[in-house]
Image 1 (cartoon, rainbow, N blue to C red):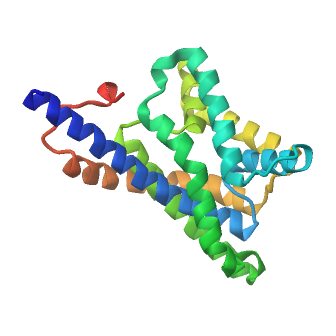
Image 2: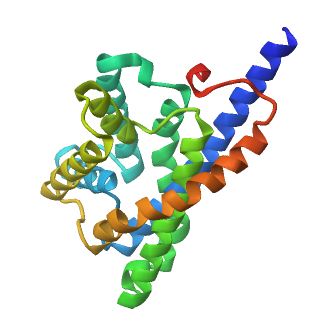
Image 3: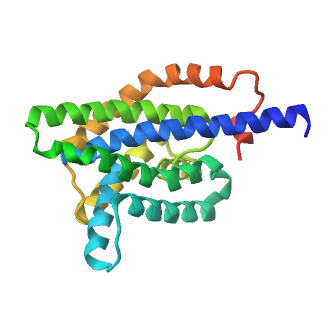
Length: 228
């Protein structure tokens, strides 16, 4: 194996590790949303609705995490039909590890009974979850190893239609929330806090985590388009 190829392979795995760290942090934030029972981010409103619906209709044992994996797999299948070039290794990592990470944190933090805490404390926990999610999300983005299936939906639609990403993202998130709410997902003040807080906080953390990622991958010539 040539020195250049070895360096690229090393960089590839470093970026995947960075993505996994960011994914773990982001889903800790998502778990805090869910445990306060004040709502969650738009995508998990949909996942929660699907989970509660299938738990009643389908006679098999499901968790929020396994529902997350199943629906993310469906999204990836649809996105592959639209344009397979959007799917990278990191996208698959997000699909398979996102749900189990939520289940793990739910098991660890569940005994704290956050939904029974005083309302101001629940809001504080929810806000902390937003900050944690935004921070982890910027690490995933700056890893350049791939993006989660739910984020890719807006990216693909925006690219294919030529419409601004910001508008498409709002429409996609609105679709997630409405669909999830109709299926029994929790839409509440937490969802609104997420919409208002995550974007600005992510904007603050993006340049910070970009510098962190560059330091960890310094010396590499591997670009995002070369990540499998």
